Amino acid sequence: MAKKRILSGMRPTGKLHLGNYHGALKNWVELQNDGAYECFYFVADWHALTSDYADTSEIGDNITDMVIDWLSAGLDPARSILFVQSRIKEHAELWLLLSMITPLPWLERNPTYKEMKEELSNKDLSTLGFLGYPVLQAADIIMYKAYGVPVGVDQLPHIELTREIARRFNFMYREVFPIPEPLLTQVPKLLGIDGRKMSKSYENSIYMSDTGEELQKKVSSMFTDPQRQRRRDPGRPELCNVFAFHRLYTDWERTREIEVECRQAGIGCTDCKRILGENLGAVMSPLHERQAYYRDHLQEIRDIIAAGCLRARSVAEGTLEEVRAAMKISYGL
Ligand code: TRP
Ligand code: SF4
Image: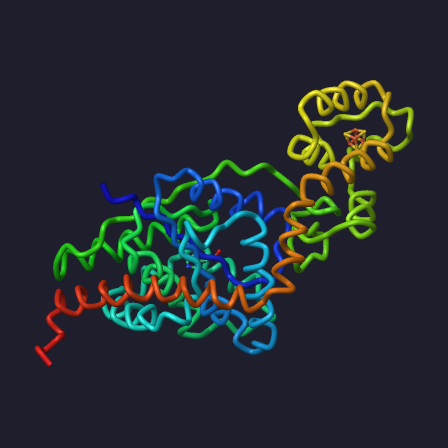
């Protein structure tokens, strides 16, 4: 039996932080390792242009940095198809064709659209590209006839729209597209070192590539339980971001000890953070080794992407042939 297909994409934001890792990448690797799925993972570089069209200077390096983190985390080109969106021109063709059947109000009522437009008020997002970006995302997904799309909750409106567009196509022309399911992941709540959401733009991120001094410095500046001002004050681990990290990086027994000691002011935050820094560094060290390897072997990354694009393209070409036939626009030419 053919394996069920999984597809997901990430904007090329550059090196990934631990929020990106636990929120998405780790899950991608697990789906790959499960063995029951055929996984397509791609760099959504055209999506980066929908909001960052004015300054494109960093996209190229960002793609490389991000793919290095993908590979270091365990995405394996022998098992997953890794590709770059803009190398598969069919995404543009399918976007165009889907745009013909997508009613404008479906896009205008999209909550993410309204929010982002207000939030990113420093950019002019009154563009066709930005309004139409969920249609591009729909094209990305149904192109590969994906069964499942691992995403965070913020992406749910886009997946819902994808389903509506796919249904509309199937109804208007012919049943070409399976209706994809969103696969929501349980995401641990990790905040940035200043206690806000971890985000590149807040400069509060711990990166997958942070090591040594840099890593220790960040961990030692992390916000803790705000009510624990003095060493003798008891702490509340459940409200402490450092503790949330211990749950992921420190073994179960030690984590339990820290929890008990924190509540009795038996351990101080400085020691608690030092332990976290050490464990985090140790858990990440195999990834750091792979990052160093790929930074010295950039040609290998180019080859991996080229091979992934070849496989993605053959699927995409097949889909577009079906789409043109269903729409009766092949004209026998
Ligand atoms: N819009 C997604 C994001 O901003 C990225 C993305 C583009 C994507 N195309 C996709 C995710 C297709 C899943 C499937 O994170
Ligand atoms: Fe947080 Fe550790 Fe300090 Fe407790 S001891 S408040 S868990 S940093």
